[in-house]
Image 1 (cartoon, helix red, strand yellow):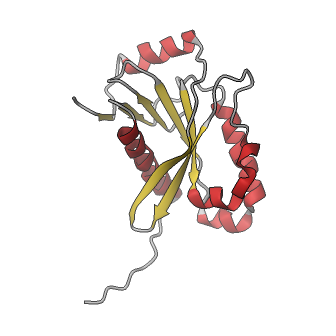
Image 2: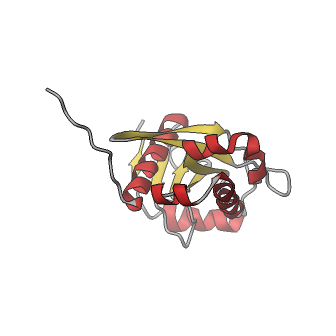
Length: 180
């Protein structure tokens, strides 16, 4: 039987939702015992995915996903996408998490080539580096995510950390929980 495959047409919200799942799966595989929150309250942390390692008592890993629509790819070039990624990276620098990631389409990273150092991956005080995750969209198959640059630990304001611990972690169940 021959099946004619039509290109998958997804809304931007669907693409982002699939990317969130790919990032959550990446964190589930790479962290020890993660508790993962999908789209945590923006009042506490402006991440698309927040993972707490060691069964909810460890380091915070925050991921911001930045996707470009297929229409915008033809309208903007690699340099403009690079500038957009830099803006996202600077927003991540103030996020209250020990490890911070920027997740972008793998195709955009490839188009930038060796210009990734321009993203401003390092904290101004020298303690901390943003991680970069590449999301590969594979048509009707589930997208995959992989870490391209491993993040380094950032300093976290104790007051902001306490707010996340008391208002989110202590009061709500994670969306994805690994049981031991």
